[in-house]
Image (cartoon, rainbow, N blue to C red):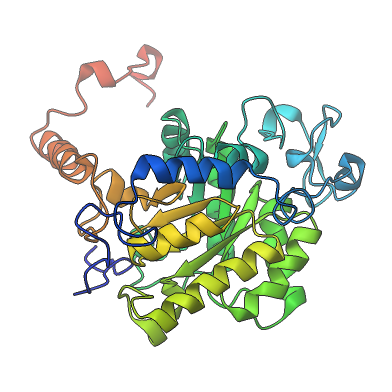
Length: 372
Ligand code: KIV
């Protein structure tokens, strides 16, 4: 496609970490296992600030949800599901994805995993990919607005619409069995009007089967995060490089001077206090990410943020080797692009050579031999 820009952060400064990626936050000699211990303590501690009150997802009365007619996402419904329009659908025509089935990853599961085991998140934009990632054991599927660059052919995430994210969130939710599905709120779908932000985010849960939303964070998203959390919409914050601000920041690493680093840190804390249940840290120095991770009680999920986050996220087309370009902080764990290209070229050659379809692909109905 040749237009993928997300992650194309150009020439960037050094990650700011030491060669071993652990950087400075705990001072020289801070070891990963020591930090692991600290993290265990951090994630499971009960210091009155992080537990229960702010960070437990609100308890929602299933009857209340039922009244919204969002039958797909509700546990304990009768065997007829109601479409958002109010039409009754036969159960076999819908694929209910209930919110709290055994085996399904919940916000609480992620919080208890934090500090115990790394959390894994991949983007997904369709049901097939969601199914594969889910079967591979990915904890969280992010229907990222990176779809703009990764699969929709845009040259940034800015043109991505609420309808595009909604359609693809529905597909991912249908493909996923166990993973938590997070819909990414696209550029200008929030931030200028609180009610509109709530409505757009709520739609992802109410109509499309997402379990949570992600919002690129700024001072303008604190109140929205608080309001959504109060209303039962779990929020993932996102600080550091926020590609929707590309026109102000470019795609380069953020937070490499102390003032900028403190701003990112404070923004992450403000969103935790507003109720975010996790925070993506994108393209910041590893030692800054380590300090944020150390301070927050909620899990941090890093991309280009070093090894000390509670989890890692990648754009799936990068992870499987489907992208035509991969950012320097990403890794391809497969080689899907050449494999697809080869399969497609083989199809073209087989048709052109008259080898496909062969007899084995063709069905002949004898009674049609002589219809005129
Ligand atoms: O849109 C996206 O895929 C993202 C991740 C890179 C975190 O925001």
